[in-house]
Length: 254
Image (tube, rainbow, N blue to C red; front, side):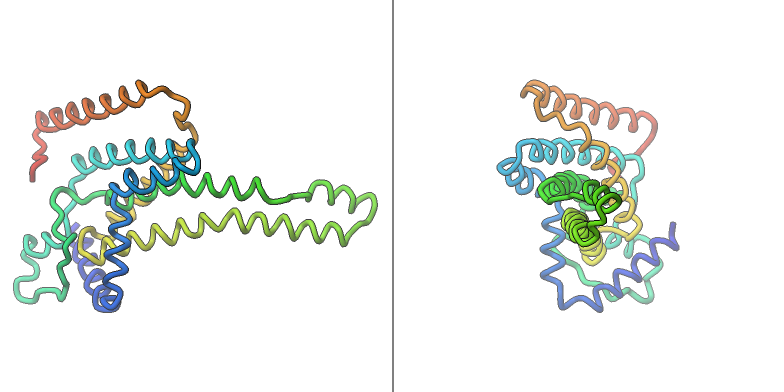
């Protein structure tokens, strides 16, 4: 892993050197990618617009945040800023990197919680928005293919094929913005030396998978007792896993 970490430091150094003029932008992006934003910003906003989407955001955020914690206990993972001093590889020549207010995060770094929770939560949002846009645009391809075959209305067919293509493009726009957001959050985490690139990639992939799976079955109609029980279950399971890993000899306070 030493070679992977070294390449990550080199990438972060080059990134800071070339994009330092956009420092405020990267700091804003990393703030918006914080898991807390899912609970205090995204959830209230989406719940106001769509109850089901709001519940999906809260549901996905809670499960992905819990799972990210468990993964970090098991996978550990160095933090770039701390690893520079602890590795002993940069005694003679320190990399030209800058520290930021959010740089010195403690605890394991793999996978990235910002990337993982952002990917999971925003998948719930963009998939809902994409479906809404797709359902609200006209599509008459089946009818016009029939009319083309039997009545030769080629002009009408072409026009409606164009309408159909426009609806597909419109409904795909949220997914494009979703990818751009994930890339921006990932770059911001590398930029401030909070994560190595491979930790960001791992978090994003895991978050996308979680978002797809959890968004399919959203407990929107469940009573409050259900969510209270799930919360207690997540808490107790986290404490059990923590105690079990300590019994197995894992140093969770490293």
